[in-house]
View: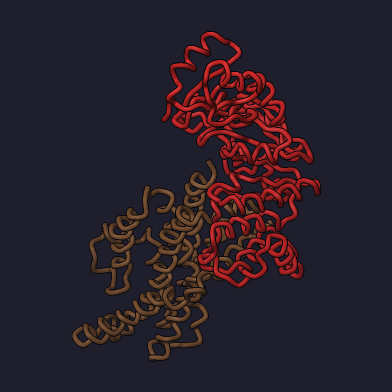
Length: 256
Length: 304
């Protein structure tokens, strides 16, 4: 068990070693996207939308964008990234000749996307708090936990997609019809309460919405503890669920 | 015993990749698996360390079942994989240090172990070079380094020299022989007959998932294609055809490069010139390639 965890960690380290070689281009979308949305929507649209649940539009957007970073970084890493490592680079073929097994490959990957989600959310959160968008900046460290808890199930969904697609282009379909719609339904841009009940119900199954609620509690300093218990708990369950299915499916790809 | 397989079988859907094979690999020997592409060599290799799971039969590696004890097995073997699968954006040293961590080499000896092996494979001067800029032969040597990091008892070489130039091939053969002499057990898959002849103590020829012959290279030649081969121009087809119907000690077959005539003695072939005016392009002792073609040729031409 300890040995297994060590190996997971070594895989995470391996990914970090490769990732940091091209740090600027790897990190660009994660930093640039929230900044772009903040400026265009926050400043642009925010001039007309001046009161969302009693706050400015920028204040409303800030928590959701922080968490969305964790969604995108984890989903893309474990879909396109994992697929390329598995299919084109054959990284796992070589890894699996060492004491590393499929379990370590998958959970090493999950640890990596989780940590990446944590760090990205933390960084975006810090920047936004500098612009005064956080009621209590002492709560910033909690954003790392939220980032981790969102990245884990979203990364596992990416992994599941990797196991199911036949070629790399099909990720586009997964993104367009599942990830992107749910991104817009997760209460980042507008309060979800105004959507039809059926859509709201659907969105609850997507991890992002719970992460958004957690981040909102942290940013706005509202009922932080109780939100963590409820939505943090849901994220843990979703993580377990998606990781289990992702592992089961991807195992069949790596061991035949 | 390093590897024991009994009636080992692997099917993928309707396709039987490995079909009830029996084989043993002994400690300290260099064992060869020969066969055309798709014969089931790599499937067998992958079964030994658990990335392909058998459908039937028995398989033990170091006395362990790879289905349940793959990690114990993998700690004791090194694999030169068919694909290099190196991290192209990293340097030689970075790549090997990562693999050292996977293999569980203690942190304080990792660098020394890697540098020693780079030296052994004449790659020291490339240690800070990115993989993407290495030549094919260098990458292959680096994959050997990776396979040797864990000081394996059993070294698996899955088509180790495919696509390499003769100089690199001979260099790698030398290293394999050295490792073999030092007591490392070796399993080699290849479709280069000469490679198998040079390196292997014992080998099997696989075709369509089955073992069609087994033995030492010398014995196999002796048993299946004893004697000498004369290669004749295709224009001599008619003459030879008449001949081989008269003399039944000859064995003939033909491909695009010529007509191959096998006889038990050198004199029988040279006498063709004096008695029938037939000039061979070349006369040579028969080799493993002749055995291979005899045993697998039929099936190959069906596919071609």
